[in-house]
Image (cartoon, rainbow, N blue to C red):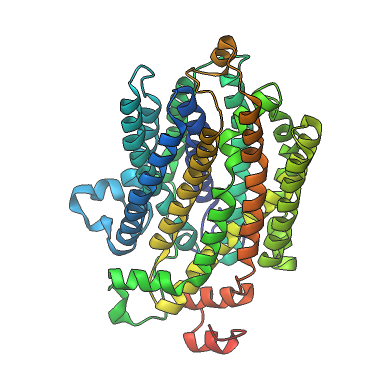
Length: 489
């Protein structure tokens, strides 16, 4: 494709406006589909009256199996060329990662829908079995969608400015859509409207499936070939190569450890609706800080690329992370005061979202580093590991939050929504509410602080990544790259 294509907005960019729009639309559908599950899973299970300690145990067991699934799929995405499979050629089309998306994306909303069809009349063992099987299938379908979509960050373009634009824009659009949709979801299942969670989740899944459809045919990959490598080794990719790429990519491992600490200890997300209902008097009260911070968050996210260009990605991540940890600590020690908590949550939303966008920039950087060091296309396994960590973190935060509540004197609930809960008049003892506050605020503060501390070990420089990317794309030779790097890697 010519670089002066009239549909391209910048000289040197590889994708057209239509391709970027189709990708963004698909990303919105994927993020929203994942969010409806993450947002409602813990609440739905609590309303089903399932033993909280048993649920926590099942979650961790599923994650052990899921770890194996993710690694295997990541390996196959990098190794297999599904475009050569005659049985699926009409479906898969051209490309390296898009064919996988076209072949499997519909499973994501399908398994989400089946999960929320769990009958409330099932006995306890039946509910736990339903949860275990469908949670495992949901996790698998999550990987089948997320790995190809995120791997496109490497194969859509070799232009770093274009890549950062796509990453920043998809994050901004995702937040701009998810926040108001989350408010709508909360209102629908609240005690003021009373629509069952099952109904909201299933209807949403149909909508988000339609949003992902344009990506199947509206995008083309432009940076598939890895240059400056031994041609004899180009087509060879074994399990040993995969593990070597993972072992070599120490910067990816640092990022993943940081993310699992921050998001895995974000237990407040799992119990947020119950904290709002029992500690602040209404399941909708925490919509206030979300609504107030909506516009400032979008503005802050839009400035992330400029901030990272001026100060460097790591300086931005470390600074915003430390501010976030401080604010979460202040929320806990101030106690469940809605005015103070709302004000601090609004303040935390700004550095928190900037940090997330900046971390999105460095994930492809770690992959370019691994491609440069190993001479292998390892995007699939890298994003499979990231997918696993994302799901593991959500599972850990939910299972830890539920487990800690289960250790308290929490009264089990059987209801369809908060209107049903209010009608039943179920009250929790003060000891359970004290644990609920710890789960909501303190654990998250500790996780944020630990996650920031890990990132101090990330020393991959932005300028060196730019050189490695040019080398991988064949714009400069490996010898030219080595001479210009700031240090030996």
